[in-house]
Image (cartoon, rainbow, N blue to C red; front, top):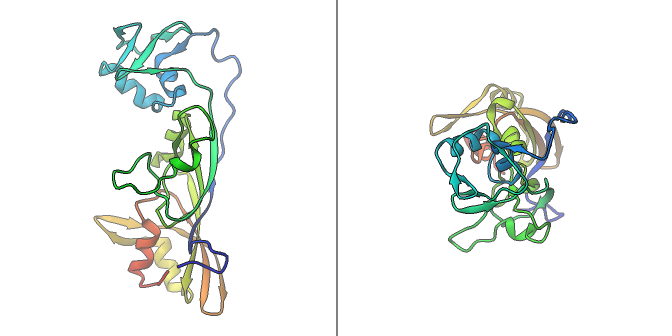
Length: 230
């Protein structure tokens, strides 16, 4: 169901985080370490790149390179699993995702994907950071910056995400405490969030929640366990 403005009842509001500026002059010349080069090309994060290099999945000028200290020159031909990788410019695209689009790069069932909405945004290959459910609307970041993607999605970095949810009725103080403490949502997982705000109008309430990690359909599963209708 939708509200009067046509938006989904379940909306991702914003992402809260901060970043430190990179030190100027950290790269003394045109050469770049192999793991950083792969991350700049949008292939993966630097940490993931190290694993691929060690596994022999990267070739430079036709030779397999497993040395993590190797520095790529502008003239080098770098391939990852046979595909040429270029040191692309960093791109960051923000999309206000509508309903009925799934957050994936492709779908074998022919459903609409978010990639269709950003296909003309830039020439570089960009990928969504995290995901939003098919019927969830809100902010979605796309980038070819593998390091940033790793930072935002890795649980240890504790990057928070705020969501707005329209529910039937109103959350009681007990339900708020349960959400904050953590609720078993099945599959050996617990859902946990901080209730930031609740605004009630007639028979509905808009609840703002903050997640610190984020599991698949976590908020929907939390409210299902609480027997609260969305």
